[in-house]
Length: 274
Image 1 (cartoon, helix red, strand yellow):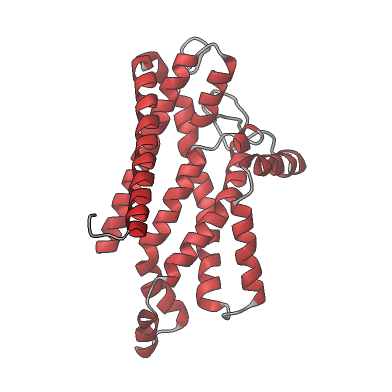
Image 2 (cartoon, rainbow, N blue to C red):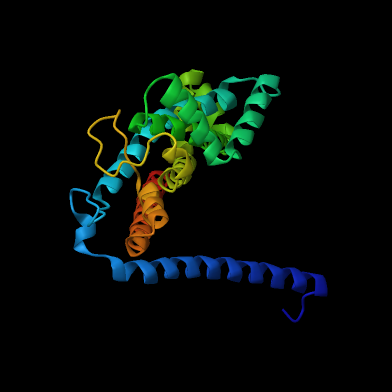
């Protein structure tokens, strides 16, 4: 630090300061949720059936898992295969490819409530699905599709061209080279995008209120209305009758997100080593 020039010292202070502020804010948020939520955790919150007295989170947890699973089933294949076409098959400098990329980046910046209004007008009203699990899943899949596309595209670009050239040199066709050589090497990067998508699905509220609804019971089918954990927490806090339970729900949601991310990160590291 003593031998650094004034400008370098200034940049170092800014960098360390920004890092300390970011970590401090994160620690404060986590600590606040834990302190406010942990004392309000009770067994009644984990009852199998929701009532106005126990405000159980179990139906919301089940709905969150189902919503995440359905959204990923729809969005991941579309996003991954679109990225494969853009990187491996489309000609470089293609104007249509450039338009698709710009559109994907634009869509990723649209507020979630806009997706919710679109889902309500198209899936809920026009297609006649009503407030349902499937309407929410399709809306969320459209919302996370640009994210999966862009992360998969960057993951495929990070694979060295020598992998492709080696596969072609051994007589492999483009399709075999992509799916046997390039795609496995890009899996860790693709999983990183899926992890981000899961975080957005689990934490989404606005889009689901307009599409999946706010029914607090466990859905019996894809056409039933239901609420995820984030919507459940919003409903409890907005009613003002179960504020303590809302803090407990926030803690459960935090633990759930951390757990899912930890499992996905562990899987990505294992695949990278393999």
